[in-house]
Image (tube, rainbow, N blue to C red; front, top):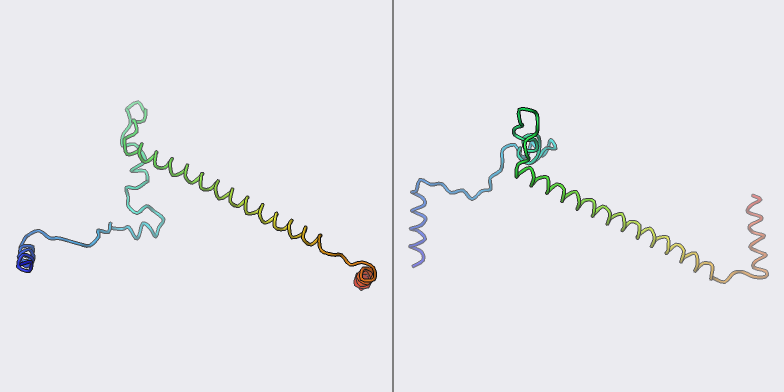
Amino acid sequence: MAAPVRTLCCSVLRYSSRQFSTTCGVQAGEKWRKEHGLARSGTEYGPLTDLPDWSFADGRPAPPMKGQLRRRQEREALSRRIVMLNSEVDRGMEVWREKQEEAKRMEEHKKSLLLKPKGKLLMKKKSQKCSISLL
């Protein structure tokens, strides 16, 4: 029973005047704008979206519109997030440097705890150092 209903739907769609598209709509010029360092669409940012549409005759600016206020809040939130993430990276780098310095200090401390030459070996090392420095 399912097959006749399916063919009926397909035949109805085939003869209807309405066209269906399953492809995603790509905005005209999006690729060009991206290649030239611009926004994906012409309405994301720029003077047409950021500046007011009108002003008073005496020169006072118009009150900001809802879209302008929303975009301003989104930009402020994004900038706060950038600053927070940047400070986290800085803190991480500082902790990493401290760990590297601590590892270096521990290595030097371990080397200082090793047994040192004594007696004839110490004299032999000193004489080798003197002969190397004379060359």
